[in-house]
Image (cartoon, rainbow, N blue to C red; front, side, top):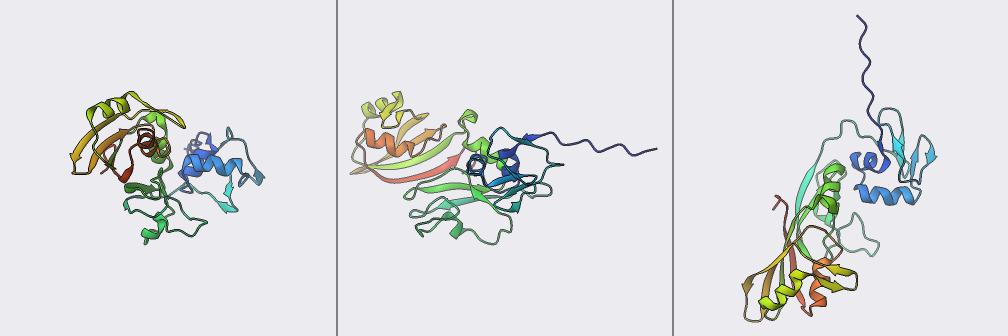
Length: 224
């Protein structure tokens, strides 16, 4: 009896294929495509809507072939310290989160960002699908932050933050905010976010004339 042909894999978006190959996140892959650093079957592709077939098409990023078959998924939870950047490399020569990772043969990358002076929970992985679900606003993944600000914070100010704060980048509204500890001259607040806008908490605090002394992420959905 003749052997049945193996079913062919469905076409996928190019940026998803690159992310599934552990090169970078899906968003970062979109930038690589736009920059003309990706080729499919020998031709440079800059169109984000391009689809490829994992079984038939050959994809290169910066002259290195991307392979998705047989890649083990790797997940690393890092307690990011202050004074390091959340990138694979830094042109200014500052310490990056990758300086704290070693002994992992797979290429992993940080999911989302914590800014230079922020600290706490950071996920690094080569799982492009998971990275996309954590970063994309439509999945509404809750991230929890503890923020120490100078001075006393009252419920009146918290009520204004809960309604949404107009910043230089538009309206920003946390999922929730509450006081978790009142110190003599400072206040610890807990912020919960599910949109992931750039430096959202710092911009909210700045608009409310609160000076941030420390900011740390303590949870991403069920990860702590």
